[in-house]
Length: 348
Image 1 (spheres, rainbow, N blue to C red):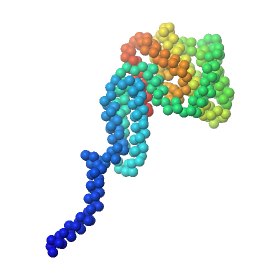
Image 2 (image 1 turned 45 degrees about the vertical axis):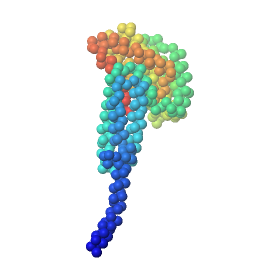
Image 3 (image 1 turned 90 degrees about the vertical axis):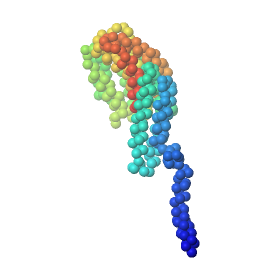
Image 4 (image 1 turned 30 degrees about the vertical axis):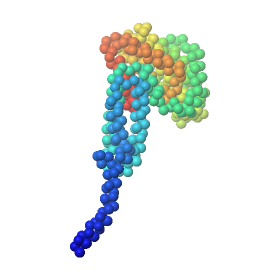
């Protein structure tokens, strides 16, 4: 009887704990060596970032084309990780977000290393911005660009003013004052302002090296106000937001290219005489390569890209000349393309 009783007690315990034992066995069968669920590890955001970080750490002396591919992969991975973290139902009790943030910073630092460990060029700065632009595939934008391009192509046919430096600055200020007073209310007024401003700006450029003793910050400030007024509640009402943005982006591109072209001419003609001028010219030359955003890059014409590439090749020599004026070593100037790429990638 005792044997029979013990038998039934054991069988009862087995029946009671069978579901628990089955769950444990199932869990073990679906786990890795460290006990972590295999399915979970595949979709674990921390694991994904660690895997990618280890991959990037092995890279050395990367070309700009491969760098672009890896940055694209990084951005896609970032989107995937964000989705996985947002789906984490125990997020409030998890360290995944913190771990991913730390790993993200580590990946960013690795890209900084990759960018800076080999010499970079200003052409590569532009190429990276072009290839990583999300606007290239937007049909609405490209349609707007194609429609507006002929207007900008026609601007060079207008003759410049011949009134001399002070006369041109007077015309410039009068144009801006008049525009601010009247406002820009439709597409024709916007095009008329761009055309007049382009003429006076091209008239002013040859005197740029003579402005050492003059304050023209009011011109820059009022120009910005004129274009900002387009988007005010009293601004253009017969122009779409996309078209307005394209007009202003294409105007900005044209101005930046004109400015760099004149800077390079002035430097090679020996018109930059002092340190203050030299630093100002360095700043102006860097503007297209530092400030062009995704939209500006996307609306560049083929001719404008080629001109920016050609000017990029001339910048190192121009900076050598300016370094002599600054009486300093030019090594920091040589590092600028890599620094611009690093800043751009870090901002993504």
